[in-house]
Length: 506
Image (cartoon, rainbow, N blue to C red; front, side, top):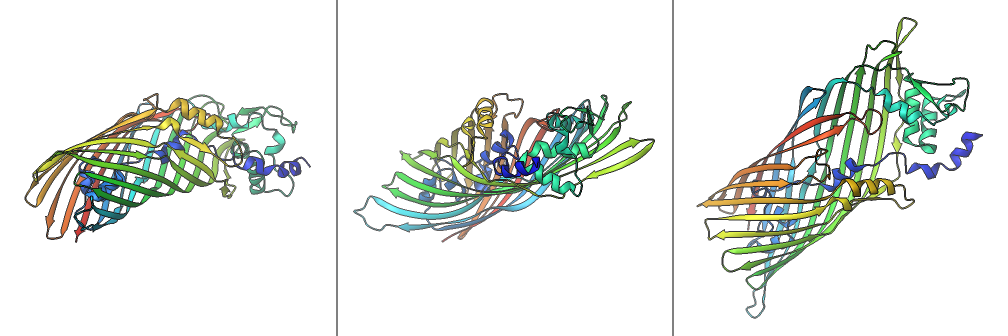
């Protein structure tokens, strides 16, 4: 009868099943200067320049700088290296990927009327891989906290009756029931109990709510594997115009597509005296789909013959996101001198209520100096306040606590980009620097990002071929889990990217 009552209020608890956190928010709130090879080679410092398809994503007025209709497609060879230090042991992991980085076109329509101050207008469409989520991280070391604490802490306070199978009830049945009525913590507790990781203090009392670990304190040999894949794609529809010889205006409407998958696996062994369980393997899978929308307005002005300035305002981005998870557990215990493997796999796909995420807007200012036909130098500055990131749902205020954490933990971020280009007839040589502050008040969680870029391009007839290389470095401390096993690994990440672009002017 008790469980029938719970099922009547299951809809109340569905939205709290999977706990979104700051890491999830930053995954979708941050982006990278991906795009054409020319854009990439100059570290994205294009706010006052325009004339490049990816520059339109920085300043919508940039399309009005084009003299002719332009089409471009870019491919990227992407490499990420992680150096993870966990309890003085360092492990390296790599991920390499080839992907479509950019594809788009700008159509130029000249206004051939001498009495009109409007010189031309442009319409553009462009796709940029706003964020590449492909990553691999391997952590290994001898820790002093067991993954058993993750399960034990979430079990405390849950009645024993809810963790025990009844006659005719399968593990899947009970796992689904707990997800609908109690949430993810109870599902984790069920896995731990059925895997013999902990036992009740009073095993004969169905109302028992206190538990003791079957893993003794000591040293734990731990291996943690994190794999992710996917992208955040940005599709832009642009309209811009040139007014007189010196002013350019534009607007962007942006739509976003999120496709993200993540898998984590922790394997732990121990030989601690008194441990009933000496081996634990815990696997979690997450699949995310989402869509979003934002808008931008921008302008570029010429001051004299050589100087240009640019201003851009980005609205917040509004996302609607759906998530699915699966998980399983395997343990080994010593029972009367025998080693017994226990596999706890509910084979259930958890599907959670959609939620909304609002990522912060951005303000950008830029300046560029043009050295006639021989080259240019450009500088961009932007400011984005990550503390304004907000989770939301249509049905309740369940994100209030997490939103307060975000507001307290994150801060405004300044980003600086410097780029230059030097032309030798049909050959262009390029370079750039990039520096982005940490979004965390505590910069040890995630450090500042710094990088540089190099590239070159060659123009022949109506075609241009460009190539760019960029490198960026960033450090962070990554907790293995938010509860129980909260030990952190120190991660040094190096991002290498090679971009190829083929363009056509006509």
